[in-house]
Length: 359
Image (spheres, rainbow, N blue to C red):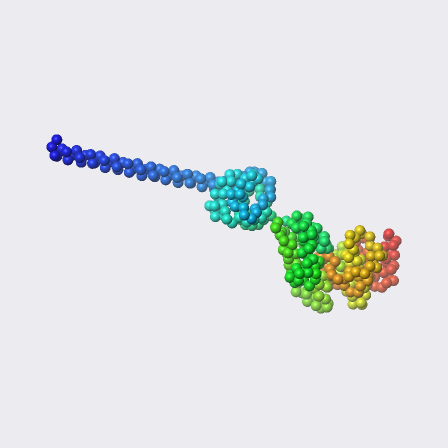
C-alpha cells in the first residue's frame, strides 16, 4: 500500500473514532437527560403524593383524641406517636411535610385535641400554633375560696390544696396589689378557659383582672363618695350575695346594711357567722351566734374581717348603689325572698309569722 492509501485509511479510522465518540457523548447526554427527567418526574410525583397526603384526612372517623407534646420531643417522636394513636397515616410523609414547611422545629409543647378526620396540614397548624386544649372553669356567684379551689381541682388543672395555698398567701396578694391576706372576694365569678399547664398565679391573675374590668372608675368614685374602700365594698357585696338569691332584693338588702352601719348598729348577718364555722352542717345554733370571731357580726360592730364569698357584678353594684329605704331589719320568708322592717317591733312580728309559725 502506497503512502496515499495509508493516509486515507488512517483518516477513515480517525473519522470512525470521532463518530463513535460523538455517538457515545450523545448517548451519555441522552442518558443524563433521561435520568434527570426520571428524577424530576419522581420528585414531582412524590411532591404530588405529599400534597395529596397533606390534604387528606387519615380517616373519616371524627373521634377526638387528646395528644400531648412534651419538652424535648422532636418531630420523629411526635410523628410516630400520632401514627400509633391512628391520628395520621404514614409518619415518614408527615415528617417530610413538616420539614418542607419549615415547621419541624416550631412544634409547641402542650395538650391538643386532635382527630383522624383532620388533614395532616390542619394537625401541623394546630401543634405549631401552641393553641393547646383549654379547660373550662365556671365559678358561680357566691362561691367562697374553698369552693373555688374544689371547682378548679375538678377541672383537673391544679389540686385544691395547691391552689388554696397560693390564694391564701399574703405575699402573693401584695404582689398582685390586693391589701388583704387572701384573694377571697376577688376571684370574679365567670367562665374561664385555661391550658393544661396553668399555674395558680395565672388563674388568680386572670380572675383578678376580670374583677378589675368590672370594677370601673365610676364605681371607684362612688365608693369614695360612700366613704368606703374597694375592699370594704367587696366585703359588703359578698354579704349581699350570700343573703339573697333574688336579684331584685340586693339593693334593698344593701340598704339595710348601709342604714345599720350609719347608725352604728351591728349587722347581725348569719352568713358571716357561718363563714367562720369549720365543717358547717347547715344548723346555725345559739352557741354559734354567741361565739366571738372576726366574722361574727352579732358580736362585732361594723364589717367582718374580710369578704365571705366572691360576689358577682349585681351584688357589687348593689353594695355601691343601695336602695333608698329606712329598713333596719329583714327576715327570710322561706321562699327566697325577705320581709323588711323599719323597727324591732315590726321585725319581731315578721319573725313570728315567717319563721316560727311556718316552722
